[in-house]
Each structure stands twice: as C-alpha cells, then as structure tokens.
Length: 242
Image (tube, rainbow, N blue to C red):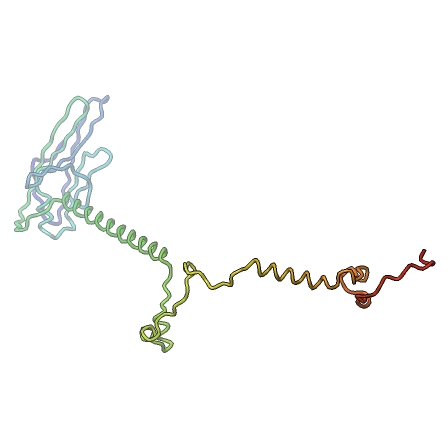
C-alpha cells in the first residue's frame, strides 16, 4: 500500500503518508524519508514540530500544520518527498509531491533550516556564557594574587591631612640605609693602650705582694679580719707551736 502521488495542504491540515510493504520473511525492511525543497536542497527527514515519523519501522510520515498560522511555514513544507524502502539485496523508491494554494512573497525556510538556525543560536549562547564564566574566574584569581589594597590617601584625607602638601613641604627624612658603604666612626682599638692598662693593674696589686695572707680570704673572696701590716715581721714559732 502506498499514498497518492501528490497532495495539497493549507494551515490547519494534518497529512498522513503511510506505506505498507512486505518481502521475504528472512529479510528485514528498512525505511528512509528524504525531502527536497523548492530550491533543490535534499535532506533526510527527522521528527520535529511539523514532521512526525513513526517508530520503530519509520514507514509512516505525518505532516502536521494544525497550529500553524504563518503561510510561510506551510509553503516551506511543500516540495518532493521520497521514501526509500530497502534491504540488503533490493530497494524501492516511492515519490510524493506536496503542494499548496497559498501565495507568499516571503522566501520560506525549510523546517530543517529552521532547526539548524535554532541549534546554532543555542551553541552561540552556551559559548558566550562559558566565556563570561572564564573571564570572571580569571579576574578573581588575578585579584586574589594581587592581595588587598590599603587606601592610605583616602584615610589621611578623611583625618584632615593633606599628604601631597606635606610631602612638598617636608619631603622625606634622610635615613641611613642598612647597606650603606660608609664606615661608621667607631673608636679605634689600640692594643698598646690595653697592655699598659693591664700592666698598671699588675703594679697596683704588686704593692700588696708578700704582705697579704691568703688564708684571710673566704671561699667567696671576702676578707677575714683586717689587712696585714706591710712591715710586720714574721713572729718566731713558740715552743707550744712546736
């Protein structure tokens, strides 16, 4: 069974193109619908808003323009429809022409072109959103690496100061640098002077040489009793000492 060779459609119509075919039971038939528009562009038909293909055999095509009020859409559905029925060893082609009495001055777009334009717009929108997200992420990372900014000028002005005026009047103090090459005026060390000081200390201690009794000192260095007389002579040992 097959549809007629031609049909006419207007807004509000539903057209069903059905084909029934059989073959050897050991072979499986396959169906493919192909549309050629008024400009000669040939495309394989896929289900969309106006075309409905039966599943799983794909042997039934429905053209649905019930919700269409634009004559240009109906005109874009007119053209040559071809159904290819085939298996591994043979094929059959069925042709159907769809026409309309509607006259339009606007060059129509086929449903396939409309769907392609919609997909293109979606891809562009997704790409723009992704690019914006990337820019925001990069900006945040750059700001994070730069660290915070302490606005000294704003705080000084708010406190009643004029940093620019003060800088012009006073400038910066001349502070020495840590890496300055100039030699500081440190006192010069003289070994001979230190030697003379040490000799003087030895001479001063020499005045007590032989005159002090070492056993007059405690362990912490304090004196026991008074200083001995410099000119005292040693007393001879008594018989009791012996």
